Amino acid sequence: MNEHSTLPAEADDEISLLDLLQTIVDNLRLLIIGPLVVGLAALGISFAVPPTFTATVKFLPPQQQQSAAASMLASLGGLGGLAGAAAGLKNPADQYLAFMKSNSVQDALIERFKLQERYETQFKEDTRKALTGSTRASSGKDGLITVEIDDKDPKFAADLANAHVDELQKLMAKLAVTEAQQRRMFFEKQLGQVKDKMITAEQALRATGISGSVLKANPTSAVAAVAALQAQVTAQEVRVGAMRGYLAETAPDFKQALNELGSLRAQLAKQEKDEPAAAAGQGDYVAKFREFKYQETLFELFARQFEMAKVDESREGAVIQVLDAAQPPERKSKPKKALIAIIATLAAGFALLLFVFIRQALRNASQDGESAQKIAALKSSWRRALGRA
Image 1: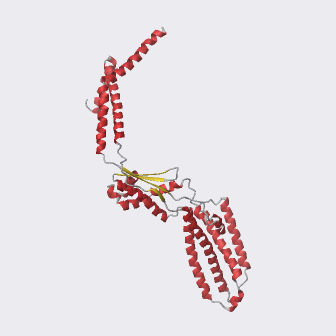
Image 2: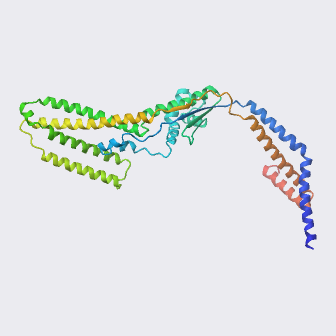
Image 3: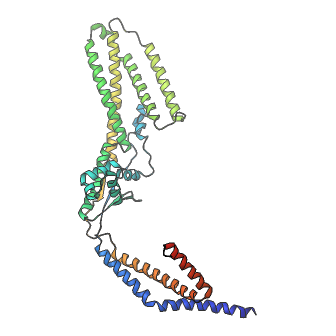
């Protein structure tokens, strides 16, 4: 009994499949010619689309290296930590990608190539968006950064791609990007300030004159010791100030630096207290001599670190190394005519296949009384919705 009841269902399934195949065969001409016509039309339209060319430039960004001056920083109690505070990016290439997308670089390119006129934009913000839309920049696992520029003019695309590297290089010359650059700029600034103070102290010392009684006092050793200790205190103060920028006050390293600063200050206070009193008429000379030795010691420390930072900067290779400069592309990158034609053909074929199935289903439903009433009600509702009733 069960075997006989399943036969009609299997027959219905077989008939439904045959109906589908029959529908396809009945509309085979439409299903073949229609997509071909649409594909050919899309291919023809693609010929009217202006071609787009893509120029590509590849370069190696500056590489961060271990500083050769790390062992020398002990003389300043870790003063060079200021330069390394901003270092430590997971992927340094991301930093240079962000630089190229910055307003500074984009505005320079906009002015250089008059992109507002080329992109026909009124506001610079819209020009930046247009430039971003035609630019693709990415970094690979090999460490290289690739910049791709799309434009209708192949030569302009190549020039704009190479200009991205030029403007990035100019921006890096203004900024302290690498650890060595940061140290070099820091010590250069400190060196200039200390040099001016040292010259002033030397002039003040010469203005005091040197008498026989002053020469007999010979304050060099005692005063030089105090001046050297003062220089260490100053260096430690600068170190603590630098650490405030990247460490919390509860950090062990910061607390240790504060303790060292307190110890140095205590030693300095004791040294100044124990310093022999200057004889009458020698006090002014001794004070100015101590100030001169203090500035001289600081100058020597900063000069040594400045030279080491310059050496490290040259070792890092702060310039961008272009592996492949952009050349005017010989072949267009867009539009891809064959791909457009294939996609249009497949999309049209799927749409027509769906259309013939729906049309056949409606025809079959109209032959059934109940379904015919539902279809009529649906048509009536549709007309009312369109305002035809």
